[in-house]
Image (cartoon, rainbow, N blue to C red; front, side):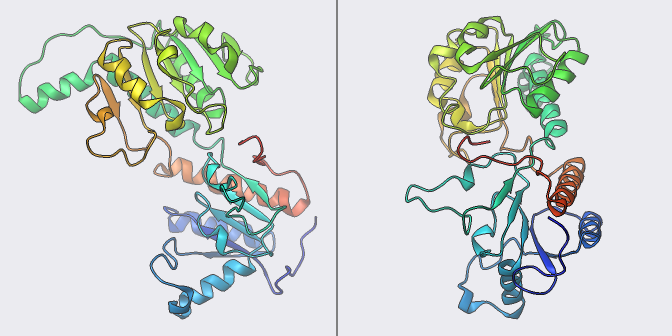
Length: 351
């Protein structure tokens, strides 16, 4: 595929960008790099027609809608505005790693306007920020920060509590892709004693990082070794409900669980019971079965549970935003050259 001066809609080849949190510096960088490859970029309002019909749209909104329909490429977050595109769309690039929003609905329809669209995610850009979140969560629990925060609230000089450490601990990393592996490297640097990876196939993708690799079917056999289980799984049929009471009972009573992948990978009521009854020692969850977590949900008050509102990743770190722009522009060059795109998704597999 070589650069063409016109797309199927006529005129300049067009890219729509429907992404929040891109500062002007990165917008200018993206627009410049796209222009070098023969594309014009328009940044689409994330709230476009959110509370009105197309007939109620003003001139600026109609212009954005027309641009979306004429766009050959869209850079989007969680599929925003993809449905407003048309048969001109050839490639949808998403800033998220999880792609469940693109799965066919129960009635067989999809947010994709037609079949045959290249679909890519941004796997590989979230390792730096999410790995740091995991380390933060582990240290909060092992260094008893929730209890000391409570002392702070009560203005009392708390006791000296027994602490845990990453140094000398054994980990099971459930989901040994970019995020899990970035964490594994940092845990190793902090003195982790043993790190076991668990993935769908058990195939060794990152030589020298893990002390062993196992498949999902072998998970039960490695859980008893773990001082901490770190979950960074994608949302697929295979991963739903993977950690349930049977699995919690295999863990050490002193072990903790950290989940930064998908909330549905953990049976939440089982996690609450495991925490409250002392089957495991603690948990840090950034993702839940239902988000936002409803008021009154038993998870809020579960014993020794650190809850964050799905903020481990996102685009709230500038490094992440720059990596997303770099990945998209690199892939745009591949697209123009007719080369295979990085992070090309297979929806039948879910990743």
